[in-house]
Length: 353
Image (cartoon, rainbow, N blue to C red; front, side):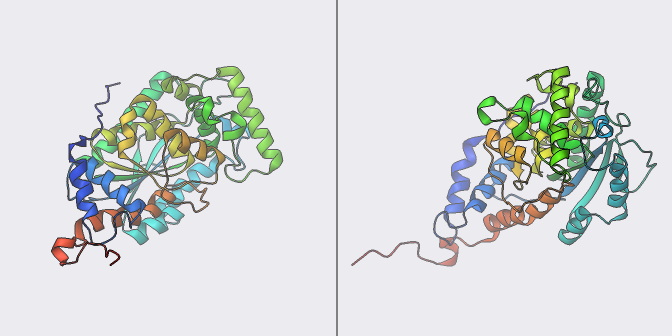
């Protein structure tokens, strides 16, 4: 696995970016979080005139061996059936990307199904799903490294074609369980990342189902322990789509691409990427805070404030797509809004006489 060449943006331009934002025709700070978002994007791109080129949503799909053991409310076949739905244009993410004019690509990281060559699908399959981590490690080190490298390659290929903004989504029955285990292992105890705290209902488990899910994850931990090395955590409990997303985040950061992060499962991939290269956070915009209880724990650990809170829990990159208009608005105002000087507007507050 080649080392990642990732550095935080040069801060020398920060003051000039902030000056440009402050001189727009508005009270200082009046655009709230959009101002910080504009600053982040401009600093990432190292320019006073940032732009979003060929924005793209990429959905990574993979199956989980533990799904057959009952950690999800849905059968494993739903993974490949939903990939077919994506390719047919019928899922929520298709509706939102069409509405917003975003390109959409699906990546088969490890689905237990043969799709053949299809438009809009990248075949990056490592294996037909992971092993059941309750009984054995989810993947081998070689599979993990291949998944990371193929995710990196997906991001680099998009960048080579002119894309500088990528939104990440996922599909994989059982992947909230994997994300819970990754969060439990990679987030410090001071952030209350105990298994019970970070394990939610996923696709809609009832109370007995949630109890069973937590019990099964506790069994997995008895087998594999609580490693803190992100590479070992992926081997023990990861999903191929999660590992590939982590590689895509790292690859995007290498190319200074803006990364729109969806919910709980994508953020578990950010945890892995962050543990390997903390500077990736300068590229990440966290789209929303999901209903999964572990997502709040992840965001607190990463000191990340999401743009929205809409009680989403669908995945597929839907939150990343819905956040895109806010990202575009931040870029547009810094580029197109008049300054006090250009508009001939006084910026002097009236003083009591």
